[in-house]
Length: 557
Image (tube, rainbow, N blue to C red; front, side, top):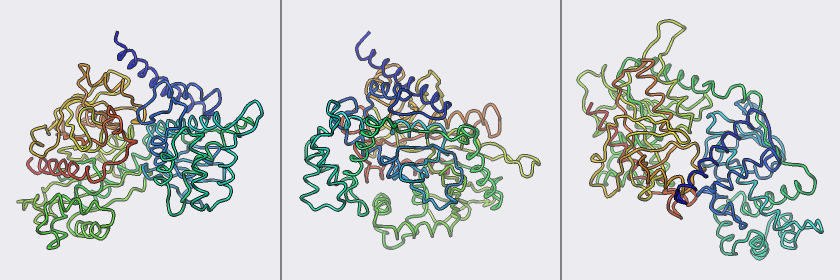
């Protein structure tokens, strides 16, 4: 057996141990991450050495991984000794202000100076995601402890003492900040240049010294754990343990959508479901008409790039207003799923887009339903509930006339670079041999001539993007599985579609499916992982190319 295959098997075993341990800790109700109960989780993550966490298994601090994690956890969580994972239990109705991480749609509440509550409304994938990131944080905090705490004398090093004095002082001059960064670089095992760059990346107007404070609190709580024995604790609320897996939020979300369709007399019309973002379908349909003469000589791509620019909020508002006047209904989420939706009545939009013909019978014109991205296992909960028949006051069930379901989004590519395309023909569930082949109505030929690499093959639905390493992904790519990329929702969507169309018969058996992804990263290339940063404008072209192909597919049929 090759060393590469041995390492891949070790990594697979480590992932399995991580998820078994997480389920056990969840059922137990609490654990101490740096205590005996958290040891299996720590050791498995260190053995796995995910690409996204870079140098987690080395003595030096991992800085890019730290930024990736901080963007997905609530601000201030590094200061908290007690972290509670809860269901939606009404904290938003109290005086607490919700803290929403920049890269994850989840509500978090700072209860007091040492406790953070994190609402879990998106299923087990949300729990896996948070616990993995917290385990990384705690491992990094104990790296700091080992470098600054002297067990023999039970004192801290001079670097830590001087660094702490600067943090306590508050507002720093340039000289004081740079001195603090030099002390910090010594115990992080990183150069002054590296820590200075990280300081700039994390600085905000409200918190110009955020990087310094994050490192201080990670080290400070680790030192307190060592000297006082007071370990940090993660708990799972009884209500969360009771509700998880029962589709409570998904059912409420789906019912709100069906009620809106009934209210608009759209339930009997041909329905096309698209899982995408909240702007690409709307912009593809209406942007050119909405923006008028200002962009009449611009290409479609130039219009989409202008709409994607952060400073062009007024242009985006103009398109949204135009869309709302021509058949678009926006339904903000009230269920806790954090998935907003849009309904497009194409009978009202006819003539307002170069995509749309005049329909001979407006009463039979298609309706497009767009749902924002689900997260991991949440994809099954939401799609499963959406495709169920709707019972009004327990009378005769009303069935949706679903003609097509399209899934688009970002994924990791295993050959190519950011912005390249993946067209799957099967989804494989990581950690098992479960596979879901399907007839994809899209193919590589649909995307030729656009200077993008287009791959066709199977895709793997992973339990968490933060738990992938080169050994596992290389095995999947080079073996007979012929895996071209990885994402988190494909298996869960397809499982719901197949059960609704072939087992429950709640939608037509010949429902068409369109899957297409564009690459957000290549985890097999150093410097191209998710921790290396976002797509920027690189993602505009593939996003709208996929969107336009899906719309063309819908209207042709």
